[in-house]
Image (cartoon, rainbow, N blue to C red; front, side, top):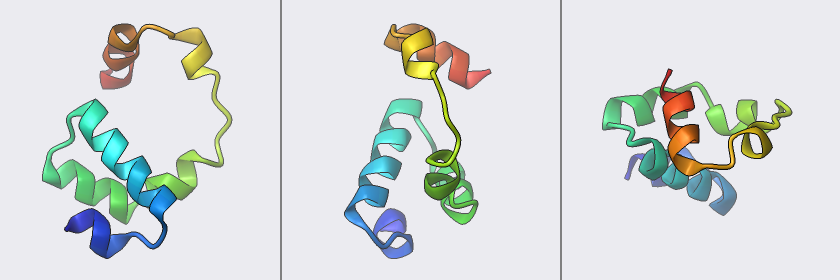
Length: 65
């Protein structure tokens, strides 16, 4: 319900659902990231993270730090 009520586009909703599931966000982290508008801020930053860390396990470890 948090995602549905605080996002406008399907693309935003998919982003937050994916991030929450992949990174195991609790409801407080989700709320903080929705409030900070992570979707729009993260899409502006270029990143080579996926190329540098192709292993999902390693990527999750790195993002948790």
